[in-house]
Length: 473
Image (tube, rainbow, N blue to C red; front, side, top):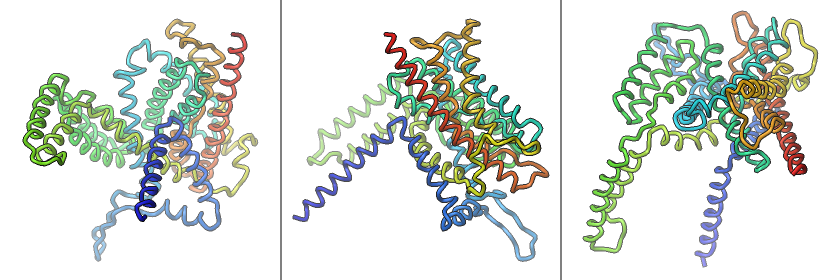
């Protein structure tokens, strides 16, 4: 009788794993988890019995402190590393690494692999960056908030694609491809913005050493080296050099990702030849086995070698992307949201993004909200219209200008990258740290409000345009 509950327990665990696998494979799953993490972070940052613990945890030091009794040695490594910086400067390196792998894949063999495919999404992405930045600058020109112009320029691909999947066949496939390619190009532009405008004071000596290491890795790639370890070890060295040189350390992930080979160690002919030899050895081992157990010792040996052979036939960049995507989507990004979306609401006016612009401080909320909600769709649509009218690009098939504008509204979902840029903004010499934190908090609230409004507006317009189209048919 004891076997019955064990059987049912195993069945429940099995069913749970199946449901879990189905959930994680949904394109909207990552967005749902991020929204939950945002809500949890807001609660942790504001509930009386958790907010102090939450903020103390984020500011916990993780540096290695080396000191001597006479005070001759007093060294922190890495200097100033806290739990919050660990998440933003180390864990987010993995996020940027996967973004770099995705960009490289799309450029080599995807939606950005030819001028014909890439030109319209890339031009649209530039429009979707420039117009929000201009709107933000017009609102905050000459104020302390002016340096946050990069916050409303990013599109969160996870949320945008997730909403498109929920809308189903209301959106033409060509526009889904267009928005995905646009978001990838947008990521590349955002990476350049962070690297160029949101780093610290540049130490050119350390940057030069990092460049030498990167050139060495590029030479390894040129010589045909395809073992991943030869790329990941230099990545750690480059991270430290970037961290202390003034270039934001997360750029390490992008730089190394672009150098990871997209060619497998074994080509098709070599794989077939080696696989045939190993398979024949496996059959021979099976023929001489003396028991019914499978696999026996010799068979395990051949199966391990076949497994290793199969891995070597898959390009390193694809293997890394496949392995890291679940970790990034369901661990690193939720952790980032938990650490960065927790804004302590000491002033409810933060939610009023339409309040009057302060002549000295500006209005972070208004600049970001208008940049995401209006700037993104206007910039994407206007740039697309110019490209199509100039015959540089072509309108996506089975699409229309109203539907393209509706889809462009989803480009205003900034979230991950926008919050990341917000964490780098507003600090500077002579700026009160409390004011910097206030501006960043206002920015995060505006990013959340602008992203929600953009998602809702885009979904509503897509539904309306789709219904009007069906009625005409």
